[in-house]
Image (cartoon, rainbow, N blue to C red; front, side):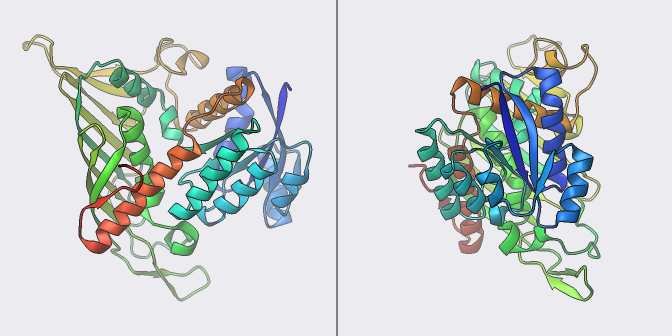
Length: 379
């Protein structure tokens, strides 16, 4: 097999980002499998056809189940709200289709467990699955992971992670599906908190084993699209501390009310020999500190992560020419296609997604009980 037919479910924000990745991965990365943008599934035939024409998909389905019946679709890309992830992913894996599923993996631990079990069954038949935590594929974040793994900052002692946005700071911002617990599962916690949980665990190579948390909803009602108001049933902000299985102390903040902050995913990792710091709003930069340097000149130094020796950078532009948000999805597609071709398990796996889901559940339980809560499965 030299090509893989892709069927994508959903065509809004994430669908557009994933479409860009499927279009660009071949010319820039030359993966061992060439993706063919075979079919786009959406509930409205008119909107799906318009999206397919704009984004480069060959055909349209109005029922995602039709993708599973098509011999020309070997991979299903799930870009829908969280309430449909489990049903689509489990059915696709059981039908022998490879699966890429957007984060968070599901809306509940039970759903995520069912998805991880389906992934395990499928793996025995050579069928692969991956959850889309795209920020792992920011070159600076991947470099940070390598530096930690190579011992450049010594033993990890502290993790400080934030994801700060302000798109809901205005109380008159309209109600969307992201504010509905039935559709989204959680609010800022699952939407952007999931990203910093995964990023922290990825960079450090350590998993959270317990948390103590606060959740808050600042604006409980918002203007409904059809008139009137709608109840906000998710959190607007999440704040929690935790401990990793490596003994590090960690703090996390995820909010849609950080006035003036647009997409600030920030993480700083302090170790016994040095430290690393990253901010998504300057995504081509990684800050590195070596505690053993001479005191006269020691300090954090800015590394511009665009050199050919840096992760993914050699496939793009000359050194110093910047990459952007959209490139992370291309890197994700390249890694997934390579893993499928090699018969390897791509990361992050559904098991990784389940691990994040269990942290989200522990945070919610801690906020409700006002107690420390151990993360399930971390014993």
